Length: 212
Image 1 (spheres, helix red, strand yellow):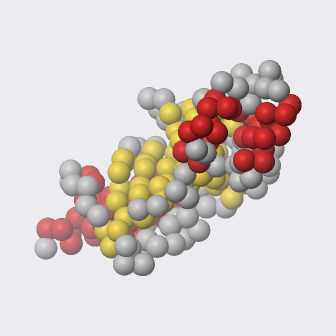
Image 2: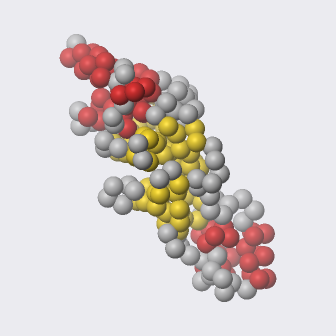
Image 3: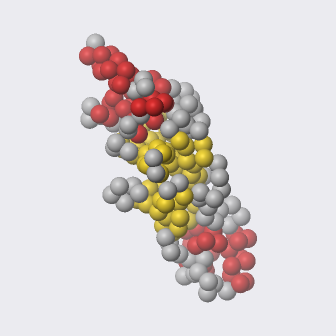
């Protein structure tokens, strides 16, 4: 009875989501299914309720798999929606606008991410000018010989780039490539000395810009 009452109170607190959402948990609960198709609103409310009570409980999702809320703060959360997929969400302000930045990472088995940004009504910002997803070429230093660069591009047909939030306030984004995991050790050794280990980005309003 006590648990049902707790869920009811949380549900009531999250009802005025369109204009009154104040924490990332509110947006997690209100997401319409584009990011969390396997998790119903009830699933998500349960996950938040368990986490806030000090328990990290795996919830059975709509594909009979398990999902788990890994980390939850007022403006940030990380949830493992399946063994092969992780989602991070950051709520931030861009001027007077509330923006939810979402990083979805899948294991292919090498991690590969995509980033999207949404307003408080879960309408997506679609302009390519806001963030340019890095490719393998962005990790190459200028001194890399042209022939070696061509070999790398042939070896890495599909760019597998992992994104994650960094910093105490999760206000930076780090991009790393998966070449060491994707290539054989002897092959990776040919390229390693010509590659940056990571790229870093910071927020500038709605835009996400690389830190040079």
